[in-house]
Length: 227
Image 1 (cartoon, one colour):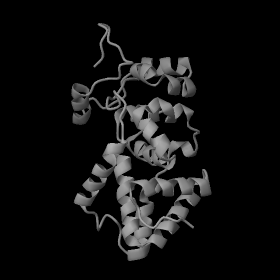
Image 2: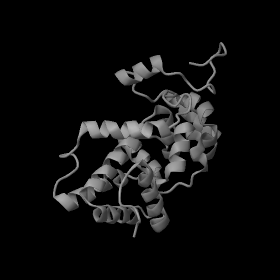
Image 3: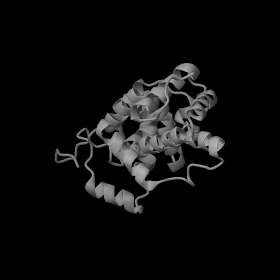
Image 4: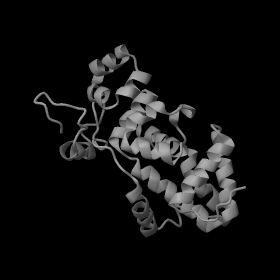
């Protein structure tokens, strides 16, 4: 049993920590434990959990973190990055916040479940549907969702360069610990040789962020500065 009766940005993480303590790496048990606790709290709190999970997953949508996922997963699709961000949330507040400040910190985090945890971001919906017969998408309020994003924003410190989509050769400098842990020098060299830039260069968003976001200071241009 949990002593939490209301979901806010602090109790969200407390509930995640309790689930991790109770269930460890068993993702099915983890989600079932969370769902049971949310059902006990009632539909309003189940909906709050859903908003919180959505806000934290959205806040982690950063290309530098996607590069980290690509190293850890040997490539990472759009759906894979969604599941990776669910896995990141399941590691708890400290790991989550550290990864947004420096994705290379994930080199020190034990890996399980292929770094994917899709269902954790839907557990609020499962509880809400069980309680009301409706899903959270039907009762989604954009204003409430924006309010949740604003609530969590002051707690998040993004590392410099986390918004830039790096090539493989740049990733080697941006994420040295992760690359050393998950790739041999030969594997990294092969990726650089085969297709150094794996992003969709026709995507307007990629074009925009490459024009506006600065690279990490770890990435040096020939003339000695970074962009």
